[in-house]
Length: 330
Ligand SMILES: Nc1ncnc2c1ncn2[C@@H]1O[C@H](COP(=O)(O)OP(=O)(O)O)[C@@H](O)[C@H]1O
Ligand SMILES: [Mg+2]
Image 1 (cartoon, rainbow, N blue to C red):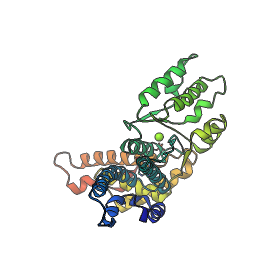
Image 2: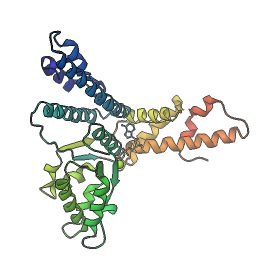
Image 3: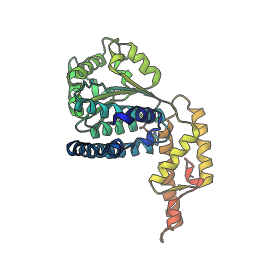
Image 4: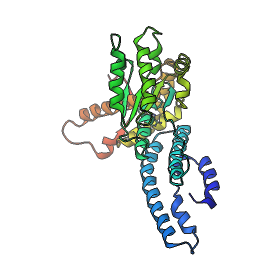
């Protein structure tokens, strides 16, 4: 990054929403370089511009995936911070400076359907694109996958999964359940094994522990060594009703469907009722996705009944009506 503009660009980047991550720093720098600069230096700058542009476009793809998620601005900002730090560490290395080794293990705290798995998947891809992880896959597991039935079994199962996660992200859902049984539980064996792997293979995989907020806070307290190992802790708040409606619209758009205004109203009612009736286990965007998938099936049945022989119009094939949203079909 150019010395002249680096401070202001950094400051701008900090306050800038993540959708504007695509700042092209190097070409600007090249344009503003003094004409008297030597040919060698100009070539170096041109090469750097190419490098930055290719990394930039790689990140651009990831940014688009983040942008497809409704809301979650604070998480998009964190992703941008991670991107910035990884980029600058490379620059620091090139400049012969120390580049502090960063720990990317994370804790995701939130209710079901708040986007934890979706974000973890994009983060895995981001780390791969930026050269932090070699493969960038996501291995999602839960207690039953890790805990075994006899002494040593859990450690073995955990080690096997860590091996599969190498080069990617190991995502443990409802991770607090590993500590539930206390000292004598086999879950303890998993935790010890995970902690050891975090030391032994610290640059080879990223561990993300996810779960309900209170339970994860409790989990962190059960082992004094844990909190410091997870420097990045991210809250996934419940979605607002209007965000859930936007999510429903984005799901329909993704699949070439359109929700009629009355259907949208109906959906809003359903979300509000569901939120009140199942306040503890309301499954946020997952609830919306399930309702939408059911609506698509209902629409297919309705159209098949309506058009047993000839094909419905394109418009009709796309339209989701209020009665398609009724969960129980008569
Ligand atoms: N912000 C969002 N924008 C669009 N879709 C979302 C968003 N958050 C979650 N979803 C969708 O909701 C479903 C559940 O999300 P997921 O990431 O599995 O939640 P969690 O892991 O927190 O239970 C997925 O189908 C996902 O695509
Ligand atoms: Mg999940």
